[in-house]
Length: 231
Image (tube, helix red, strand yellow):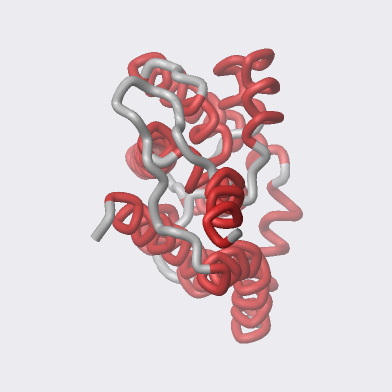
């Protein structure tokens, strides 16, 4: 299997795990403390962090919450950085990203982008822009830790509405599960549609990248080449 094939499988699996976490969030939030950590392992997005920190009843549980959410998010960011480093054109096409625009924006925002808009796109762009991995990891850990602290205080400030939301979720578990499952399916559709479109077009699963750096082929270049061969 080509290297990008393995990367593609890992990417789809990671997205699938995250969507399972989104769909099962009401069930896991309704259970005792360790289930909240399981939700963070599946999907440690900002909303889940704000909800799960409400379940921390002591310093030990709060420390566990902080460590799990930081490790989960940093490991995912490191994975997308690796994808961007080794399979930049493929992963940007898969995620539907504008590579040229993103590189210009990242050049201005630098690693502060990890704090402003954390997530897969910024990690991929940082790799494509040749940000050193040591700088990326240090900045990512600091940004993730700072964001977790900020979300902890956000949760403290929104005690009443969050408690009302959790109470409604517990009382109407089936409805909440249906809502979160529907949201997970809807948000998964863009990635699924791009995968199906690429499969119909029949583009090659990998793009050659020379050892000296820089990308040799893009999908657009491959299309032009194929048209010349046919003519």
